[in-house]
Length: 226
Image (tube, rainbow, N blue to C red; front, side, top):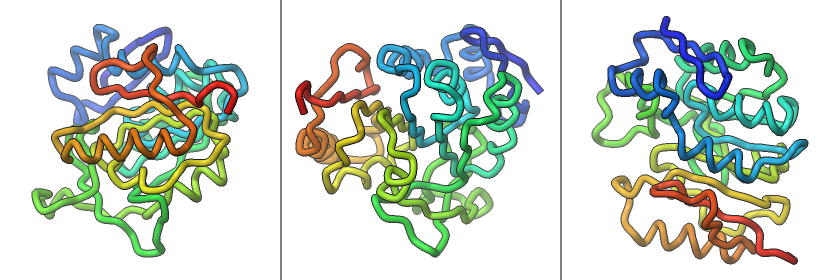
């Protein structure tokens, strides 16, 4: 088990989930630096947060420290990461964060499970496709974003879900969402998907937020007065 300290948060990650590159980023404090910067720029005390793609729970810990653990819900598909996330939350005093298991495969979920590629590298897990090796594929609950947003009523939505964001921008989002932060994965879909994301956010009353956006981290905020 490897131990790290980032932004005053204590994180533990099993050696089996690491490689030299990610271990170095964790050790240097640069792990998910752009995502952390974006979240800290827009988070407010008491704000309700929905995170899709927990990873090791680092961003959930950051959000809990600012917004309050009881206001944070984080979702992770890889079952092998659930004890890591829960351990890191507890280690930092954020047991009240809600951790949900499942993959968000679209605006609407389904009773049947979803096939998920639980890649050895925790940051690379994704909904299974034709390139997924059979030994890596596990069945996980199929969650819908519409239901999650109705249950959590987040003001801030954060997502890093390795391309599954392509399925979440077909209809306008609810008015209680004030900010959206996502990592794009242009290698997994064409430019038309990014165009659809931007168009959907615009139709939802959200506009490009240049302050926290950087590289593949694309952020939106509600248009002032709407």
